Length: 451
Image (tube, rainbow, N blue to C red; front, side, top):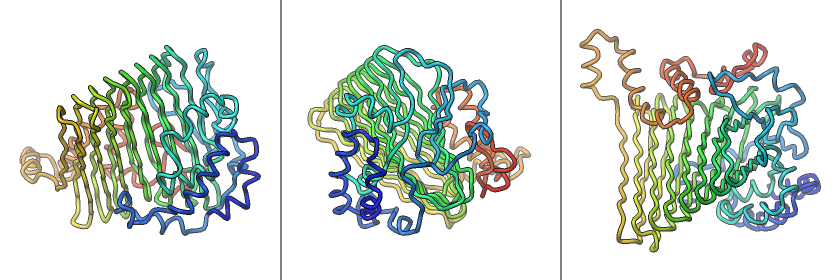
């Protein structure tokens, strides 16, 4: 990987922000020391990434590999979801992204371009939440990422419509994608940001994506990530957030289809009276693997966090959840709650869950818990005794299990679409990437090529 960087360095650094290029020097040393995490690294105990990073992928730092018209293969299909929509194709901002005029001062576009135009934001924020020397995959992303999506919402601005980022993987060769995303919500500003991850071809993809999000005092960020990719995709997503005084973060993660997914979710409550609400739903079957790792850092007093992750696992799929809450010595009067619940539909499905609390303050209310079990036979019998068939009764119980997470969606159109997709998934109607789920659908040509 380091040799790959050395060979392409002039292309990777060409036109990039000096701050971004300077970080590559640190990343080179860090990656040489850390490498790709294996299961010997405690945080990656249940997901050995080395096996997948050893495969051969194409790396193209200067182009996305897509030359068509995005509108011909993608149409929005979420009822009543009018949004500012931008596209990233194979990790690069798509120049053909079109949206109505943005509110004054709001900036959305290419990370590579806008990081040069806004050096003050780069100097202040870049790499501060996702330092290159903390994790091998972050170091690799810092080393190789050339582009991604940049979102900036200025002070006191309320963006009424959602900002929809559609991340598309496509191409006729196996490809490695490194994408860097950057979100800044300034003081007393509000925005909703929706990341939708899709594949449009049957090639294999290795995705290493890092998103840094900063929510200033009294700011509000409502963030969603919906993953629906075929089983030839290995995706490592890092989501790093910092919150200041009285800020609110809601972050929701839905994994509906994947090959291998590892979500690294970090949220630092760095100002008093900040609060966050983080939830996730993962539905797996066949040989899928989903690993959610979260670290909620209570650094200041009088803050609150609520975390809920649920999984429904079928066939021989595997999963893992590590939820770490740290309450630092100065973080008195903290309220922190965490729960991870899992439903195993077969004897072959496996789930490893590790809820963790580290409390260094004495005036707190904290709790955590985890469950791994199967469908309630008494509830199933109750439904069948009232004339409901076994298959339908099973689907009803699974949906009831997932309902709590779906209800946390604050966008009505998105909530209804996710509800329908989850039900389809339980009925076996969404066992392949045959539609762009959440935000759109593919044309017939792409449908025939999907896995």
